[in-house]
Image (cartoon, rainbow, N blue to C red; front, side, top):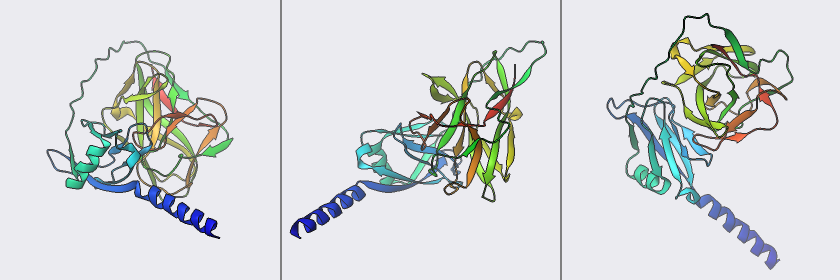
Length: 275
């Protein structure tokens, strides 16, 4: 009996210890000049899958464990200079002031030379014609991303549209961010966009297409395209058509998290491009 009680109290102690190691930190992200709230900013510990995304009012809640105190935390969004913190320093800063200010970054546009020859239009990626299986986001954590590498034929290649096939959508509407990255060592690296692409849809089933003409996306090499969860949907209410063959899916579980190659299914994502 005494031994059982000791085990019981030891388990309670371990539970309390694990609970005490994590804490929720709340803050607000704003433009340093206009003081306006910044929506859908990524905040997280680099490569540790401990991150989130600010809401439409710039507010965020981030759970941080003590074990990450010596790690690096990054706050970033396209069009602004990123902010880097040691996690322990970030905890101290947010305790003293919940407002964080980001400064706009002036992007340097690369010169693209276009010839007079007639351009070809082609779809790249997984163009699925029939249902094999369906799959969704890895979890409901904000900043969760899923995507794939797209290989191009010639450079420059102009990205005109993105396509996905919704298998089912149980929500009134859903919203995600469409991201494009260059590659390093076979994994997503830096964003190649000049501005965020936010997509809102009410489609229940069928092909979802995003017109990208206005974003002037030009690539010189193979790239990575992904959809990112920026507003909570709940578990399992949104699935896309997928297959067991095709381009390999790469995902990360939260903002600033570690990219991981998925060995099971490949989503029906594709792009329309001209070259």
